[in-house]
Length: 379
Image (cartoon, rainbow, N blue to C red; front, side, top):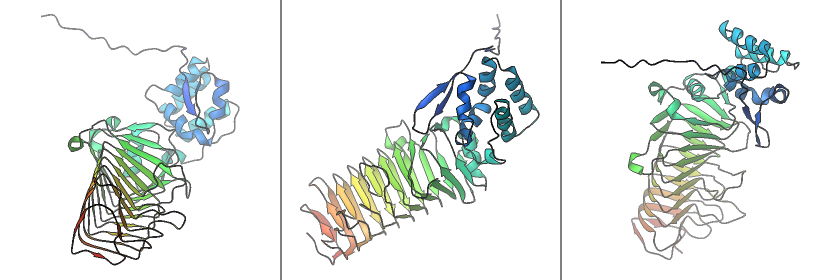
């Protein structure tokens, strides 16, 4: 028998210059190949990106300078890393060698999330983290299987400065965290998606005892579970997903960005369940359900809408809906429940509506209800 002999070789890139990509403030992506151009990005705004290149397995930042013939900075990086110098010291040292002022404050490296590993470290620790990522996608295939259960986060703050996409391929659980945008009112888009079209086989992401503030949470091909959470000024938008919300509050969503639909809960082609949920104080529809199945039990939907336009608190279209033991009341300049087409099948039991300017229930189509009270009428 002849044994195969496998040779492992470490590739020496020599003086090859590998371009480093940055995203400018105007969202323009640029690739940098020479030292003069990289100086523009040695400032606070790009610390996470520089950290990503500095700490990459391929040593991209060191290779960049080596490829450009600057052995001094390349050797400085490698020797500093071997001696255990902090990221702050290394980046400030490079800045000085480039003729720039030091710009990295002490401790900032512990507040930056730039890859899957640092995301995990943020969620599992008790510190406050700033997610300063450069519009990169975090793919859960890159996270070790042992850390898929993210628990006991000690009300950890995950502050998103830029949009985040999480490509989910396995189950993920997050507890006791706070996801918030950096600005006090600006919304950040947090997308969670998979490539699995079959809803019964989609990976599950679970948020428990977690707060969301100023977030637009977009779910595509995902099994989303939300338990005992507070969603303030936050929208959940699902497409071809399964969603369960229980024991949670969804309130005060006031969109500051252009959205095709400004409903607080927007369900499209999805299977949705809500139990013991409060939906209130949102600028537009509290719930907008299109081409989906929806079950609402033991919930309270109130004070959604605004005085400028008429948005129903609960808008149903081309859907199969079952509502039980739920109140819909005190809407702002609107009706409580609106059924917009004859293909929607709606069953109600022990549902109560009151306090609407127009009607508690507005529908020209067949609605089956039992032991319900529409104090503000049916239109």
